[in-house]
Length: 604
View 1 (tube, rainbow, N blue to C red):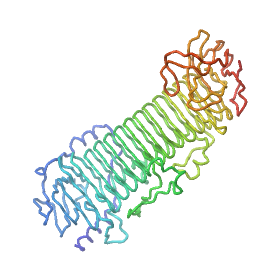
View 2: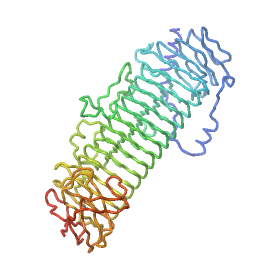
View 3: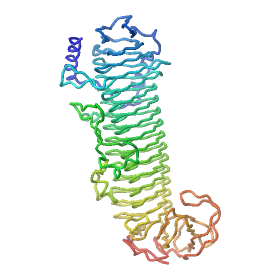
View 4: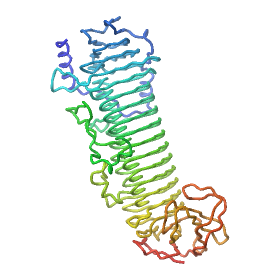
């Protein structure tokens, strides 16, 4: 058997110098559609060219197979059915470069005490089909025995040096006691299946790419749950998920793509790094996630996990749809470049940033509920065009490359790689509610608002403000309500085309503030969730030359959402001021207690 293994390792070493073919990112071209049509969907034992039955002995019916003690080698293309139990052995695929091999996992139980139970050494493409109504179990060793000390492959319970595809509707359980669960050095393509992986390091790993169309996945990993990590080719290292149900628990990242991550749909429950309760303030080893157990570091690229993010991309991260329940110790959604969210439903608890993009963050739709974060949304440029966003932040709510980043830029996970002298926030539509202990809206550059609704329950301490910007905050449309401390007060800019009323009054939490026009019509009724000294309200209903009455206290029969009342009527309050708008910023009190908003501010 040792002689046979030596031959296999020699073949592996020669083949490792070759460059395998790898697909580009998925598309909807005729070629891609045709590929899906011709792929096999064998689902029964009788469809196999060759059957391999494990038990007290190994029985082979058909051709293309050699057996050496408990090592079964598939040597040519075809369809092979595996069934029975192999307590200590291995199935190796060592076929021709153009051969396509399909293996039907027909309720097979494979265990190895020295290596990977399934090892694809050479083939054009290998497909593992999970036969309907069956459950297959693959369990590897806690330590691998290599003939050559310089070789570190295979390093997964199911390992392929070439393209690997998994389909079928059966069940597969992978117990990876050494390193990774299922790994391909090329493309990993999963069409369906009920797959459970328990891995000391990564769960699913496709070096060049991972594409998942459907299936149910339960992954418990000491490293990353799903990972693609080609660092040498910018067209590879991507992950696309079109659908499926995912329950991911990882010490490292939940889903990590070296380049692009695209999610078109699916249901995701993701916990990373022990969850949001394991934030940097509670762990001196924050951001230093080592490889647990016997997970090994590859000689070709480091496997060491240094972050615990739920969704992570090196370049572009796009979400079209899906349902996400995330509890992460690190950033919940993170990219080193750009994030685009077009839809989906998100419930996020983060020990660091809720959503972080180094360059741009565009939100065009979806429902986002960030129940816990250090900073809610963070990027150099943030654009909100649509969607519904609720967020709670222990520091800044929405931060365009700035804010109280002394704790974020030096040692926190997902360190901010953007400039501290630039930053833009654009509100063009949608609904945004921010509850922040630090600055509510913070831009090291400017803020522009042309539409939507933005409500900020800002800080109560004097070191932060509901609004914080370096250049301008121009409002031309939409509804803004921002409350908080007046010690670092900034109002919208006087260059705004839409008027703002600033109510300077000590207001207890949940106390109503009401603004009526000269006819007694209720325009705004709002109650901050925290005690505040100032409330800024900008509305297209505030007209220059018109007179408005401000009252506090009282009651409203309207429906309250995020402190803002809709419908009903207001009564019983105490008059605070009557103002006539003469400029874009009008207040009932002195606005120079703190930094002051730039530009002229009229006082009634």
